[in-house]
Length: 578
Image (cartoon, rainbow, N blue to C red):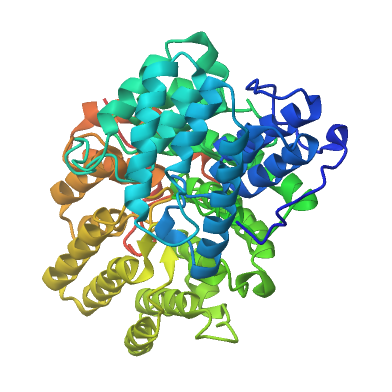
C-alpha cells in the first residue's frame, strides 16, 4: 500500500461518493459508522482495491477504536493477495506492510472477544507474526492452515467461506491449473477451492456475495471449462456499481468464451467506476495497475487493456484506438517515475498498446510516423516494441534494407531492457521471444525463404502459447493469425485451415486458455479455407457466425493478418453456393 497514516480521521459517512452495493457483514461494534466503514473496506478488499479498503478500515477504527475487526481489516487489506504476492512488494512497500499489518493484527488480538472474530484474527496473525522479514511462504501456509480450522468450525458463515478460499488461492496465485493438461497443479489446493466455492454457490446468500463470485471467476478462468463461471460473472456485474474491478472481472470469462462485445461493455462500465475513483481517490497505489488493465486485456494491469484487446479480436479499430487514447492520458511521466511501488516496471507495457493496435489493423505507414520516446532507456520496452513494428512495416512495404536495420535496432534495444520490467505476470524478456521469432519469420518470408519463415513463425506460436496465463494475453495478437494467413497466401490451404480451427477452439489440440472463440480474423480465414477446399456444407454452417462477426467489425476484413498481401476477391468472402 502507499504511505498511509496509521490514524485517519473518518470523513462524513454519508458523503462517501461511491455506490458499493448493499452487502454487509455484521461485526462486534456498537458504532453504526464503524460498521459502515468496515463494510466498505471489506467490499473494496474483495474487489482487490486494497488501498481504498485499508483506508476505510482505518476510518472504522477512528469511529470505534475498540473494534477488533476494524484492526483485522487493516492487516487483511495491507498484506499480500492473489494478485500481489509477497514477491511483488518492493523493499519500501514490504517494510511498510510488515510494520502496519503486524501492528494492526496485534491490536486486534488484544481487543477480540467474539469467538468467530477471535478465530479469524488469530488465523491472520499467522500471516504477520513479526515486523521483520521472514519465510513468507511459510506464513501464508500457516495462515491457510488456521483458516482450515476456522472453516471447519464456522463454515456456515459466508465470509468465512470467502476468506478461506482466498487463503487457499494465495498459496499458488495464478498457478491453480496446468494450462496444457487442464489438471490442477500439484502445488495448489485447486480441487479444495473448487469444492468450497461450489458448495457455497448452492446457498442463496452467495449469489449476492461479491467475494465468492469474484474468487470463483478467478478459479475457473484458468480451468478447462471457464464457461462454468458465466452465472457467477453475470451475478457480479453491477452488484457493486462503483467497484471497477467487479465490473471488469466478468470480462475475463467473456473473452474466453468469445463474447467480445460484452467484454467491451463490461470494461467501459468498469472504467466509469475507476474514473470516478480517480476523481476522488488516490492515483498512486497498486490498483492503478488494475485500472490500466481494464483498459487493455490479462492479467491485471488495467481496465483499459480489455476493450483494446476485445476490440482487436472483434475487428473494432475505433474501440481499440479510442481506448488507447484514454489510457495514454493516465500514463503521465510523473506517474511512471514514482519509485515505490516502481510504476514503470509494471506499467510501461501499456505504452506499447498503440503499436499493437496499429499492427493488428495493418496501419504500416502510421507506425512509421510514430515518434520514439525522448528517454529511450527509461522507456526501454516501448522503444523495443516500436523497432519491432517498424521492422514489420518496412518488410511488408518491400523496404527490405530498412527492415533489416530495424531488426538489428530491435535486438540492440532488447538487450537494454531492465530485467525488472514485466507485463504481469510475464517478464518482457520472455514476451519478446514471441516478438523476435515473429520478426525473423516475416523477414525470411519476404526474402522467399518460406521454409525458414514458417519455422520461425511456428517458434513464435510456441513462445506465445508458453507464456504465463494473463488476460489479456502477454502478446496481444496471436501469431497463428499471421502464420495461417501466409500459409494461405502460399496455397497451403489444409495447414491454414487446421491452424484456424485450432485458434477458434474447433479442436481440442490447444489448451483452453490460448483458444480465441468467435474471433473475426480466424473465422474469416477458416471460412475462406473451407470454400477453397470445397467443404461447402461446413462453410455454410460457419457462415452465420462469420456474418455476425463481420457486422460487428468496423473495418473491411479480408485476411486474418494484414501481412498477407494476396487478398481474396471481394465476392469470395461469402461464396458458399449450394
